[in-house]
View 1: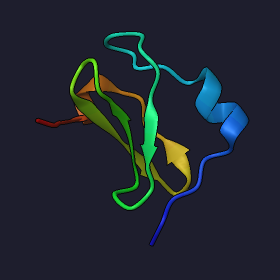
View 2: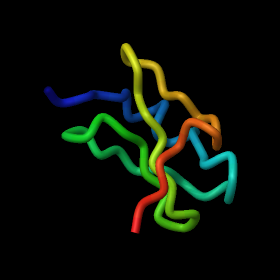
View 3: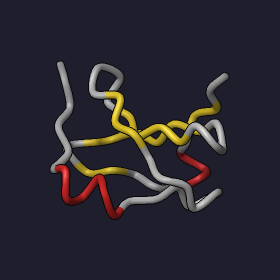
Length: 58
């Protein structure tokens, strides 16, 4: 299942850790910050931008 986030929303969202822009990984259902190395889940179409809920990526 792929996840969709409106483009206007994606433009204003930022990583709470690094304040860097996020990119959508629609296959994984996550918003990814390449700068901080964190992936934030999207649950029921709502981004969960909490560092405690984020997954560390390589």
